[in-house]
Length: 304
Image 1 (cartoon, rainbow, N blue to C red):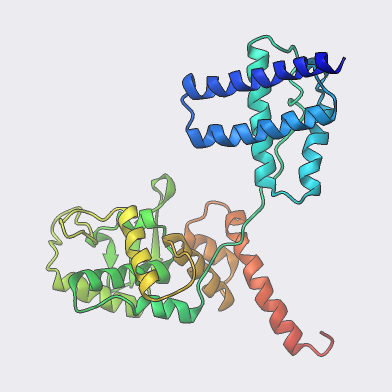
Image 2 (image 1 turned 90 degrees about the vertical axis):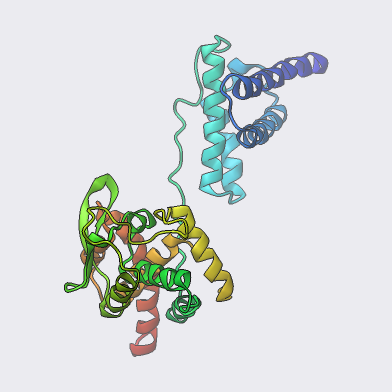
C-alpha cells in the first residue's frame, strides 16, 4: 500500500517537473522565477505527503487553504503567501489545460491584500548633508546640487525631472511645469532659494532659450539625463554624505511629502503637489504624521 502511494506521489512530482520545464522552455520564464516556483512546489509536495494526498483529484480547495494557513501561523508575509498562491494557480491551470484534472481547486482561493510598506524618508539633517555634498566648483557638482534641490523642494518624480526643459522654468513665479503620468501637466513651486540657484545655473550655461525643447539637465555628452543617470548621481552623494539609508529619487519625493505634512500642510494640497490621481495614494503619508502627532500629544496633554 505504502509503495503504491509513493508511486502515485511520484507521479504528482513528475507533473510538477513537467510544469517547470514548460515554464522554462515554452514560456521562457527567467531562472529566478522558476527557482521561486520550484521552492513553492516542493513545499506543496511535502504538504501532500503529510496529508497522505496521492491523487490530484483528491486535492480540494479546503486542502489548499490548510496548506496556506501554515504560512499564516508562521507569520510569513502576505506578499510571499501571494506568490505561493500564484504558483499553485499556474500549476493547476496547466494541469486543467492538459486535461489532467477537471476542476481547478484554486478558483475559490484569492490573493491576500499586500502589506503596505511605509515609505523611507530622510530627516531634515540628513537632507542638508545630502544637499551640501556636491562640489559646487565643478559643472557636474553645480548641476547635481540643483537636481537634488529640485527633487527635495518639489517632490516631483524622477521621470518628470528628466523631461523638464529650460522653457518649463518660470523664474518670476518660482515654479516649474512638469508632465506627469498620462502626460498630465501641472505647475509645481520650487521655493525662492532653489529658484535663485536654478536661475544662476541657466545663465552660466548660456542655454539656448529660443529652442522649443532645450533639456534643463544634460550629461557630459550633451544628451538629456535619464532616470538611471539621476539614480547614479543620488547614490554617489548618498555614499559621500555617509547617510545609512538607501536613497533613491523616490526617497526624496517621500521626504518632501512627509516634511510638508509635518509642517502643517493638508492632505489635499499634498495630493496636488505630488500629482496623485487619487487621495488614497497620498494617505500612506498619514501613517508617518500620525506618529508625530501621538508624540506631541503624549508630551503636551495632561491626561496622556
